[in-house]
Amino acid sequence: MRIFISAGHSNDDPGAVANGQTEAAIVADFRNMVAFYLREVGHEVVTDGVGTVNQTLSQALKHIPGSDLAVEFHCNAAGSQTAKGVESISLPPLKGLSQRLSAAIASVLGSPLRGDKGWIDQKQSARGSLAFVNAGGVIVELFFLSNPQELAVYQAKKWLVAKAVAAVMKEGR
Image 1 (cartoon, rainbow, N blue to C red):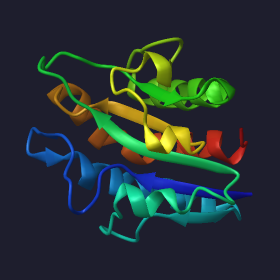
Image 2: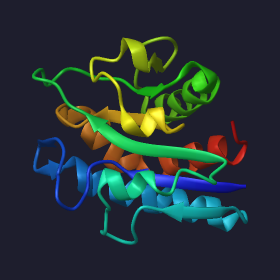
Image 3: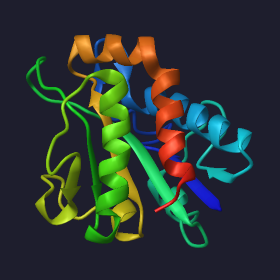
């Protein structure tokens, strides 16, 4: 199985910035951890960069064709420091995968599932139409970067989260 893993945003766009962290740096690190676990069990893994390199969305989208699975990681952010939870955004055919990914993260972090058991239909997303989703991928919002408690739990358990996500991804759609 060929799996494409993308870190949201890019080296040119830090994404959300909160609590001394940037979304782009967190998700590039997470992408690398998930790729490590998937390669360890023999999957062909393509990423949108190596190490701290994180390609732009237009470059990342080129990797989706020919992939059996495409997942992009992000962190949520809100004006409230108490917002929390996990969600995955996709088109309806990937609802089950989205829910499994969200549930795996929530079980490790102790976070609530947002949306429909962790799934947000792109049509119902506040973000509108998303190029990565339209191309057949799933966008996973790992936790709220704006919530210092969620960030601390994530930092303490990120390798466990990556292992749980990789376990879901290796099963495929």
